[in-house]
Length: 334
Image (tube, rainbow, N blue to C red; front, side, top):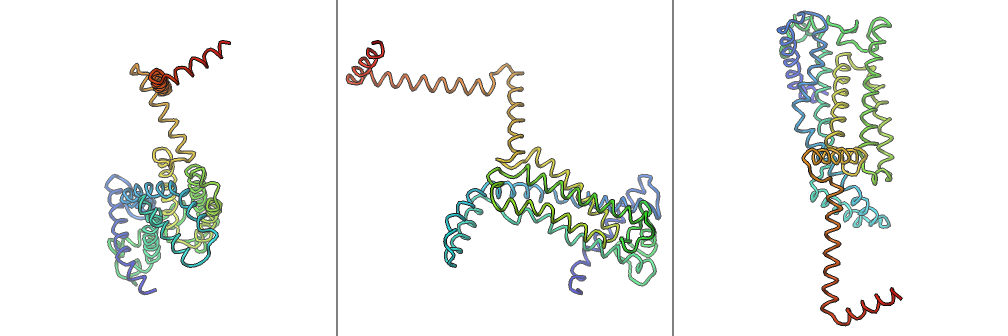
């Protein structure tokens, strides 16, 4: 535990410093200083700052997920190839083939976990920062980053909808405060479930939907919100605000992903192809050009004419073929 505390201490310092800087920015824009909702908004704005910094990782995550989902049918073929073999050598060979396929396609199975792995220590550090507010305000602990004794007292006294940032469901006073915490936890669960459901049912290739892995992913869509319910009632309200804002960001990011970067072969991918097709036809119509369908039909007609011309030339050069074609023509007339 002491080792974990030492590892997270620099992250706690950064988070405390960011909170005070964001709060100072809000007060410079005219929001009230001292205890109040400004500190709660600073916690929520902390999510925006962190997630903007994680956008490059999100782009890599999208490409990694698309690559992994695109090669899932080939991975399943490799698994079926070794399904009847249970010896260790065959299992190692199967793993080598799968890893070679992932390297060839540039797919990283851990790429989709990177944003979550990075945010885990941030959540833990924010938890420790909020938990240490009473000790810093009373002088029992040293200042942390920009949180000196006076500022820590202001943050400790700050509340949103009557709930202080460091309070949890068990320590909150009054049914109204607990109802606010329950509402925030419900929003966390609903946004998490919506994001999981959209990704599984709209951004998964149709071939993968028929596999056992898809059933496992569908169960996870219900499992993660259940974990939120358990942990949500034990965490400080400030952490819940951070988590809820982060889930809302994730849901919006998922909708952007499905709109512009869907997985090929998925429902979202088919819808994007239809939108791109309609947009291209509209552009061609505005420019006075033929539609995609008309262009394809014209190309097919040209190919068919060229094939018939080659066949006609071949019959002309081959007397036997010419006689056979004459005989066939006369039989058809008869």
